[in-house]
Amino acid sequence: MLITGGGNGGAGPGEFAGDIALAHAVIAVAYLLPGLIMFAVPGWSAHHFPWKMPPFGAMTIGGDLPGSAWMAGIVYFSAPPGISCPSPLTPW
View 1 (cartoon, rainbow, N blue to C red):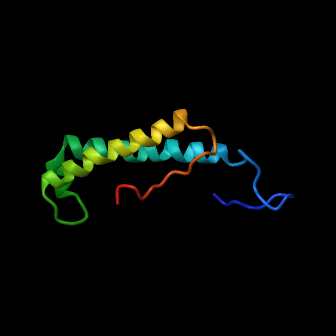
View 2 (spheres, helix red, strand yellow; view 1 turned 45 degrees about the horizontal axis):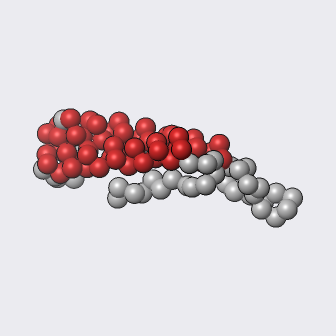
């Protein structure tokens, strides 16, 4: 999202609310799907992970990602538009 100034030198209230809500929805889905796969199939996930890790480690990350997705979903459905920005680096 590129935030550019308007005629008054800045973005107006709610001007980027749709973009922020969309970002929350995308992040919720992006965290939920791999998290469920890693939690449900930890052996396969550990084997296909970019670095060596035990299945319990993959299952732990798989349990953390749906929690982050849940929080992004809560913000998407209940926060006033434009009040918060998502943090895609939360699990890392």
